[in-house]
Amino acid sequence: MTTPHLRASHAFTSRVGGVSAGPFAGLNLDDRQDEPGAVAENRRRLTSALGFTPEQVSRLDQVHGTRVVQARPGVQQADAQVTDQRGVLLAIGTADCYPVLLEDPEAGVLGAAHAGWRGTAGDVVGRAVQAMQELGARPERVRAAVGPGISAARYPVGTEVAGAFEEAGLGAFVGEPLLDGTRPLDLCAANLHLLRQAGVPEGQLWASGRCSTGASFYSYRRDAGLTGRMWAVIGYPSTSGGQA
Figure 1: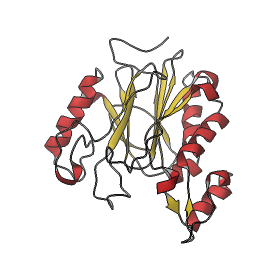
Figure 2 (figure 1 turned 90 degrees about the vertical axis):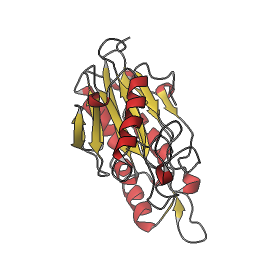
Figure 3 (figure 1 turned 45 degrees about the vertical axis):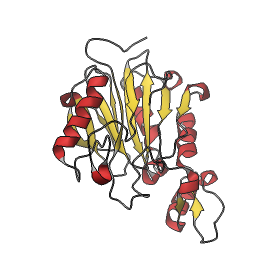
Figure 4 (figure 1 turned 135 degrees about the vertical axis):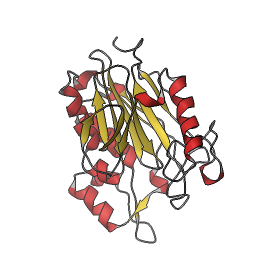
């Protein structure tokens, strides 16, 4: 899945098109449980389609926090990354949380964030936009794309999570209590709000509108933890693309 909203090479993957089998069947891009050879082939297919190699991917050991790092090939512990360099492909792995891709095409600055409930409550997308500014981006030029994630209708939460959102000033995105006492949480709308709050104009926001519990995606909640991961990726290839 791509959007004309972003000019850089990018994609939001589904589980369609890969070689993994069993509960990971399809384009699983996470090798913690799946057969490493299958995941390596899936990663090769994705990166090749975008003009990169697997060795150029900047991945994150995501811990549901708000740390933002400078992207580099390899793995770092964080939940968002930014770069002004070509030849590096920023990757975010998800299976219900929301991936957010960011671009200031004029400055040639990119960002990518992983927004679960903790990251959203901590404004990880706002922190990513701030880190992009340190590389020369300007919020009014930033384009943001929110990929597939779990919809509010499929994401009832308990009092701890609802309370955390209310304390963060995001109570408007927690719905009325359901019969079992849980409340639906709209992570997508909350992140769009935070992007607006960070200075990204309304006309430069895009959301896929796809729920990760659908059959085309991997979903941690639907599959009780035994599932693969999608990637959201963005980068400027070394030999082309980039600034407007």
